[in-house]
Length: 446
Image 1: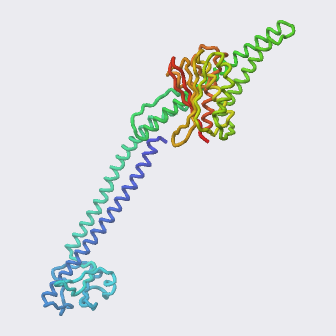
Image 2 (image 1 turned 120 degrees about the vertical axis):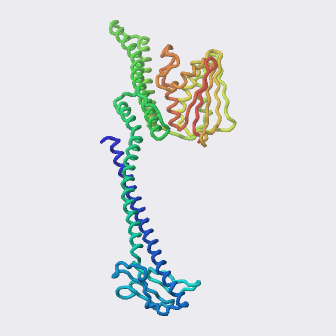
Image 3 (image 1 turned 180 degrees about the vertical axis):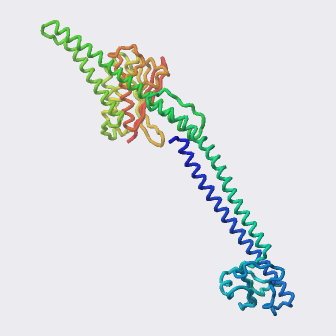
């Protein structure tokens, strides 16, 4: 079923029920109100006759039973009409009607006869009205009934027209979104839907555009990942294949120095596979963590001691700035050791001889949570601003031309980011070309 017709049917049905309910309620309330006003008018008109009689007979009901109340009035329905007058003490002074006055009095339709502020009697009236009054009542109530039918029909037509307009207004954005959603479903992820409103439809459009963009990025990342993995595997496999062919062609004993390059490439392949495995586990949220309160100072000192010989050889100064009091973070020491090792190796790689690497530990607060922050800043070549958003992507290298053996595989920063986020922390980077780069890791305090 067409979306417009589906919504239109429901909207028109709801409006029709509402119109019918309001019309019936209005008609019932109006009819009841007019009926009560007419009854009150008839009672007061009849009561006025008794007041006049009481005053004309010197404030006495003497002879009231002989009163000809029909003078000047043309009575209707003589078998159904009834009127009675009771004294203040409850005695029946006057009665006209079929049967006795009991049923009339029990109906409760009464009016008090007041003379000079004193109650001198009570009048009970039922359908005691003149022909003129009856015709007036019939005309007014009949007119209301006829007008109610007209109003119901007119309101129904207006509801139909308004429902059609509202249906078109409401479904127009949906009809515009449906083809775009269908295109996204079949893989046309480059499509972008214009955002023309700021209401819920506009928010849905923005969400669809964002979803399409994320799907496109994920698809591109998948393609790049496949290409990068194939490229990373091709080089060591080619080296191993070349050495194997040389060994086969030689037909002699294999010296150890011939096997060493092959072993290096096997180690490189093993590390690539292990890094990819760890990265995939972290991205899937399945990385096993053995977290415990850990002092970051000795952890960093152990990593610095491992890298110290290379730093001294290249005349790179490592400066440490630790807090006076012990600052524990709730971490898995082995995973975070790999994070800081990757960051420090990167800093060493891009810091020239005579440069400096600064390591600083502080505590900070973000979103009402306390973190231990570790900053690693170098005085290296720096990174261009347009490259910063991609630093933590798999296999991304700021310098594509550099050797993969000297520049790494492009997984170190991706692993660092995923490991830190697995600890419910986060990592940031600041850099300026020619002045160096600073990575800051935020880890939850114990």
